[in-house]
Amino acid sequence: MPDAVRTAAVRAVLIMSLTIIQAMVAFLSTLTGSWLAFPMVLSSVASTVVATWSVLDVWVTRQVWNQRNGVVSVPSSSARQIRRERRRSRRAERAAERDGTGGAIGGRQNTGGFSRA
View 1 (cartoon, helix red, strand yellow):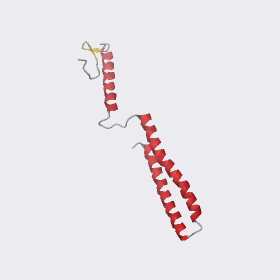
View 2: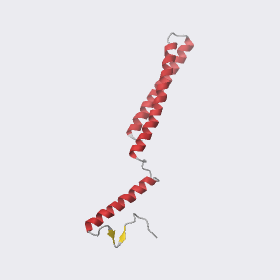
View 3: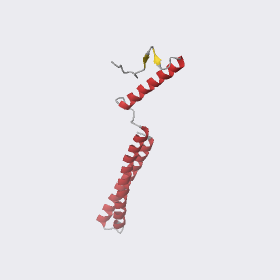
View 4: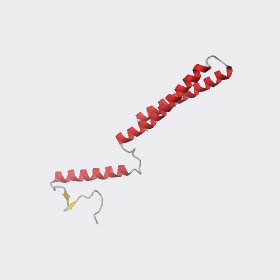
């Protein structure tokens, strides 16, 4: 998990846990008839809104990270294979330019690992 997403997730878990504790205090103070019940219920409602926002922030942060940095590399990732093939073809082109063959290796153009049958 990327650092930005991890930070947002930790923040969301902390906010959610505090919200749950606050809701329990509001519930118990309502049962006992304490004067603290009404302010705690109001603040619990506000905390629920903030907790929902923080969970949404984790999702948005993850989406933004994926858009900026691409697909997370996993062995089955097709994007990883395409990047690898592009790198190979660029290296072959640079090597051919250094050798002076002008991009053709052995009279054939580089096909990036695919045959043109």
